[in-house]
Length: 263
Image (cartoon, rainbow, N blue to C red; front, side, top):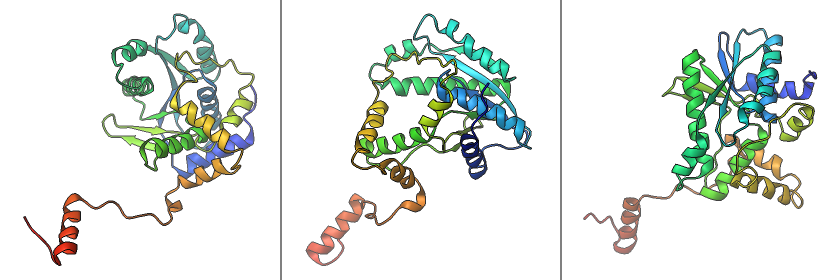
């Protein structure tokens, strides 16, 4: 296999160190879809395991969402990939296609993510893994941040490290400093599994991705500015939080009658 570029490895090490993603004795389950992002994550963690002084173990899980009939055949390439890296790989079926049909009133992306994560967490508990690693990268984080602002008026995105108290599992995202184009360039010769999702390329996230690309034509630094805005220390002058109805009522009567009014 190709040697992991130093620029990518350095970004992963930065994330691991800054956000304290890996500890001695960790048993890490990698969520592997077979796409370029998860293949890079698997390769990078295997490389880190060889180079790092900390002792931790790796295993991998692929969820078959049953979107297509030939998924089991295609996933054999992923299993071979993991085996070459010395990582045990398992496949679990979750009929997400049927669940999406049953929950027509909900976003298919929400339904897919919810049941996919639940299955991964269950398997992690089965094998005694204390951490689950996902391949979300910097573009994902920025797009989530921008999408949240546009759709809900909130400044929020996913965290590089999240503890799930219900399952006692810590989710880690070692690729949060890696750009998607870096992943595409490195995995160009990998046997990447095309997403079987029938909504691939038609989601709100894809619209946001396209919007950022379009806006960058007029605002070349947009992506970098959005990435900087995700940091807590980037907050400038903002309005105070809205007052409650009771607070507004008291202020209203103070303005109208010159004092507080209690009903």
